[in-house]
Length: 137
Image (tube, rainbow, N blue to C red; front, side):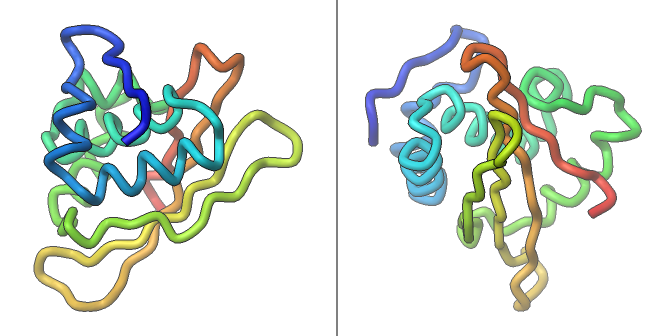
C-alpha cells in the first residue's frame, strides 16, 4: 500500500478500506502506478465503496454524474456485484485529456460469467477530479 492520505474525516477511511479489502488494494496500486496520482487512486476506491454502500451523498462527491436518475442504475448494478471478483483489466491513458479509461471486470453475486464496465478518471488539474461512468453501458 502506497503513502495514502485521508482527504477529510467525513470520507471513508481509505487506509482501512485498502487493508481490509485486497481487491481495493490491488486497484489502488494499479491506478497509482499508471496515473502517478494518489488522489486518483483513492478517488476510484472511494467511488466504488460509495456505490457499494449505496451512499448517494458520497457518490455525488466522486462522480461526474450527480442526479438521482443517473446514479440509481449504477447503485442497482453495483449492489449485485461480487466485490471479491472486482479487478482492473486495463488502464488506458487519454491522448487528448488528462484522463484515464479504466476497464473493470467482475462477477455478479448470482452469476458465473465475467461482466465488464468502463469508468473514466478525469484528472482535470490534478487537484479536482471525478469519475465518469455511463449508467446505460
